[in-house]
Amino acid sequence: MYKKLHFLVIILITSTSVFSQYNYNAGFDVVYNILNTKCSNTGCHSATSADALKFDGSSASVYSSIVSQTPANAAAHSRGEQLVWIDQPYQSYLLKKAATNWFDSDLALPAGEPDSASHAGVGLSNVEIEYIRQWILNDAAQTGLTIDTSIVNDYYNVNDTGRIAFFPKMTQPAQGTGMQVRYGPIFLRNTPGNNEVEYMLMRQINFPSNMEITGVQSSMSSMSHHFLLFQFPDSASGMAKLVGLRKVSIGTSGIVTPFDGNKNLIAAWQNPSTITLPTGTAFFWSQTSYIDQDFHIKNYTPITPGTSGIVPFDFYLNISYRPRVLTDNTIEMRSQLVNNATLLLLPNMVTTLPYKDPSNGNNEHRYIWMLSSHTHKFGTGFNLYKYDNTMSGGIGDTLYKGTYDYANGIDLGVYDWEHPTVEYFSPQYDMNMLTNGVICQTVWNNTSSSIIHFGFTTSDEMQLFYYMYTLQQPSTGINEVTKPAFDFVVYPNPMNNTGTIAYTLDNASTVSASVVDITGKEVATLKNEKEPAGTYKINIGQDKALSSGMYFARVSVNGETFTKKFVVE
Image 1 (cartoon, rainbow, N blue to C red):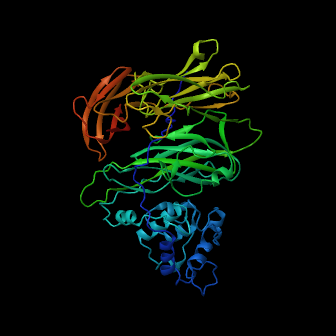
Image 2 (image 1 turned 90 degrees about the vertical axis):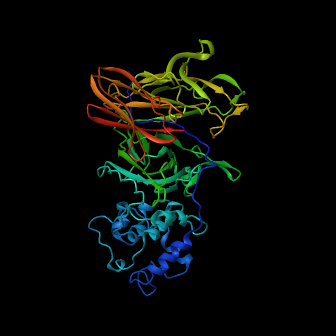
Image 3 (image 1 turned 45 degrees about the horizontal axis):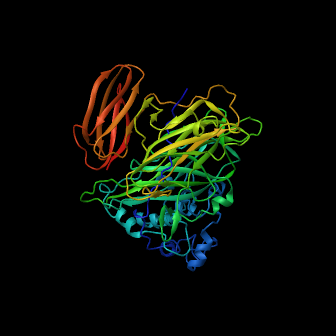
């Protein structure tokens, strides 16, 4: 009945008030100086040129002539680009012109679109091009500090062998079937105890028409902790977040969380994967849509002589779509996020609490496709049930068991609060919200000496669950969700001294398993043998202790290799 998709819906709200962040020390003044000194004397950008774009004017006049302005170039205009598109460097024609023939192919002009010969002698350096890109990425503001020149300089001012390469570009969808959105790069140093950060970033998406989103695919840096994708239901909600990179934090200067604003969670990833919605369903997005992106990264790179220890983190998102046709009978996929903000957990005590979906009682049927859950570090159990007022506490049939790995059909025996399991229903589960609904029951073991309340840091707690549903049962038969030929789970993750790899074989197979570090060096050989069909668990760290850091569990089945990252604290 249950099928697994390569994607984890998680709500990971972590304390980032002490995390590293950009040390902004420059802004548009640096960009203006680059344009004014290296571009204003060329034929097409000087005061004597008939071209309206002039870089030898005042800072204010140059800014107003490039930001949110339509390019005169017909090809760029037809692509919907702007000279400088706030927060969107890869739709900014000025940056593409400045970075002509640069190593980053995302900033290359399209084939067949020649660059002006006058740019050949400009010779902007890697550092100068990156200054412009980071300025655009972080709000393209006229005033204020939006560029960390130190981290850019340190990244580029090492030789090529010592510089950590940019994350490889993901293949784009075929023309007319989708589009690609790139997040970064976000530069992050490996500074012991201060090598982690989480940013929000709003993006405007322009489709050829109103669209049905049928799937989303991710590709991300290996040290990425998670990526959350939200969609704003209207332009006003999206434009309210047009402020560049927003660091997730709780402090005296204010609170920034992934839940800020009026938006819906669409998907979340901890590993690259593809989400394909059930046949006959789709997300409905308007021609101009706004997305919010939460990117949580941590730099585990070993610091060695001749290297900067700086990683350019990136995330690529492919959005698959088809034009919205009112007569095609596609059913809209929706989401429901339920959060108990009134928690009170007494110290040194195990607490069990139910919490009902506030939508219970609505006069509608919801056909549930997936379910998932979330707590913080004190959470030890999380089940979801069909609400039944004839039963004690309203706890009816079990819908979701938090200790069960639905991907491999294994009961892990523990609730992995940082990597909660996800359940998919095929066919979708028919829930009469008027007479029934959804209720959760959560268990926490508060081992601290303090009262714990609801909050966004891991020292606080949460009781949250999330599900996707439609208001009609798709009529195309059973909604199969893509299941990989082989999958496995590593838990707990992060782990302290020991952990487990669990998997299921449908057929007799030759299996080898090992652990490699972030440099690719094998640090532990765990298994190499032929096994009959069945469920298996392999211990990690029992024979050889692993030092703290990031690792990859590598499992090969009949010669095909699969990899999952995990962290040892």
